[in-house]
Image (cartoon, rainbow, N blue to C red; front, side, top):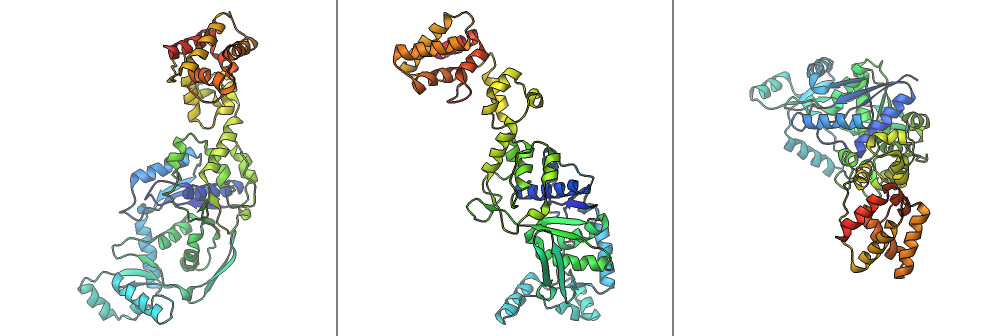
Length: 446
């Protein structure tokens, strides 16, 4: 199947997990079907759209290794939207309205009080040319609506199945505001049509928009243009409450700064909300082959940031030394600490811990100092201690002082690494060497 999809965020904030899910599902679907991927910046909201957000979204896509084939901004296509609006107006399918927000709210409440749906009454269509001229002369602001056909719109959704909407139950959508700003509902249809988009994959909150937009596609293309739709269910928090970008660390920049591998994001979001098991794929091609958009459920999946961290640990621990050699650890050091690596940030921490200039901030108790002194004395008698000899040094301290477990190992581990836990302590000492081990202990004892 040949396809073309688009990811079209509004640059009104930083990219979050919900945005990333839409981008990733679109990208995987595109690659699965040998298609094209369009990155479109929906920046018709000139007040809220900011260049810094656009740049940040691009940086996040680059970090996720999402490569797009085409890109453009809606703000560069305003004249095209105006041309299409003029065509629709000439056909009687777009019309000017003059009600104030207060008047519209009054009409809405009046309809509800009468038991009717709060649908716009199309009173603007009854205005005569003289009445419109008078309103214009008085500088009354006007906006534009698209006249919906009085019929039902049906489509087969890749996620939700067969859907039908009676357009008589919704208001004619506003397509241009009084300030001349084109609305998403309209501008995205023009863009999708001009770009040849074949599949629109987005959130369930757009389902009603879809019914109206199908009607617009039909009018703009004279019924010759067909788009496939897939509406993903919206995320909820792990406790089932409504998902909020403000809760937890759902910002892509924050997640990236925590040393997460982008494949951990891909692996979770490609399967979250499906019947498929989430697997720690390290190669995108393997995930593309595994991906299946028709496995997504209409039920809202629970998002837990901890799931990303768990997948990340599995991915990092599966990497060969060649894949991480650029991160500054020797092969021997990496093999020693790899099971304790949970994020890319850990590499920097271990580089510091294993450097020859490291000094622990550990403040030993009197009992700790006794154990450290005895261990260093025993280790100092050995020329080039083997692991067995190091173990014997531990046994010597334990028997002499009558200590074991945490009382024996904790002060030495803290003196050497500043950590409460980590790789095998005997192996750490072997990696550091006798001189470095003794240097670190002496620094703590001073």
